[in-house]
Amino acid sequence: MSKPHYDDLETRAPAGRERSQLAFLPDLIRRAKTDAPGWAGHLSSVDPADVTSRAALARLPLLRKSSLKELQAKRPPFGGFATAEGPAAARIFMSPGPIFEPEGHGEDWWRSARALHAAGLRAGDIALNTFSYHLTPGGWILNAGLRALGCAVIPAGPGNTEQQLDAIAHLKPTAYVGVPDFLKILLDKAREANRPMGSIRKALVSGGALFPSLRQEYKQRGIAVYQAYAIADAGVIAYESSALEGMIVDEGVILEIVRPGTGDPVPDGDVGEVVVTTFNRDYPMIRLATGDLSAVLPGPSPCGRTNMRIKGWLGRADQTTKVKGMFVHPEQVAEVAKRHPALGRLRLVVGRAGEVDVMTLRAESASQEPSVAARVAETLADVTKLKGEVQLVVPGTLPNDGKVIADERTYT
Image 1 (cartoon, rainbow, N blue to C red):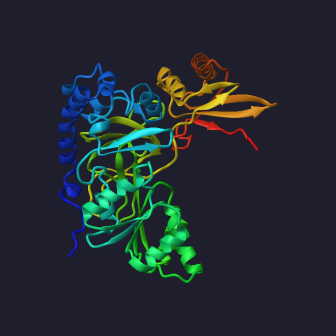
Image 2: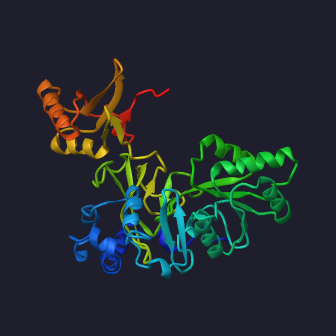
């Protein structure tokens, strides 16, 4: 009988997992600072021995994924953040940006086997891998996990629909791996051409949103589809299980949810930016700010896995916008909040009035006194160098969606 979990790590007591992961942090940071000049500079003021708790980790500076392109341009090929530089890597990839990523030596380097196992794939399955193998790492990330599980892989890549239908008819793959939408394209083309695709009964998708209606359509066609959340810089971050209640954080990741524009963790349940720390010896990531939004779900998954769960992808945290020709950043809204700690959630709304850009800061406040709004307006002008109105609202009024800048101008 097939085991329900990939290994015992998935079902260990949460407190034990936390102790184990935190115990690894000092050595991870020490090795990164010793062997990677980018990390040595980025964490120059950090004593690795001090980082033994989540609170201590939260005091470390973020490394923003959006800054990697510039950092790599200054120090090729990987910005000094890889402990195994170009010649020591097994493969080197180029993602849009361009951002370059290494792949080191060893089995399942990106840690995708766990997510594939949770999606029902097992040794003996034949998987049609439609992620790209060209320059970007998508195809290779899943390829490594499939091979580690003992699956045979059809390295199909995207496109070439007719050729893929030929391969499906002849090889009868049992699983699909790729973006959510391409599976529907294959299914629809197969139906139009009266080609067989009934062998595919399970799928792991990533790289795009799996809308509930699409998941239901796949279910009606006899295919159980699960999602994985992965990025090129950190591998698999979280994945779905048969419970279909959120996404379970991978065992090789420490995940934080922080207030956009800051590195400050938010209370569980609040939407914020996903920040990950990975224990990769070749390409360690220490508080990588992904730019993605999510939120922590309470309690363990009904499937028996005990790691933290998140809601999945809830949008992008980078809400920078331009007002009257000047950029306004989420970090600036966070600075206003920092200077007025009595405020709750903030949202800067940008609109148009009389063909002129206007901005209004909506702020949750227990006090509705005009003097409070006036002081906050002064701070807003000081921080952004732009004048804006301040509207004080009752605490709990603003939506919990992680959005701190809302551009409501119409561009059509």
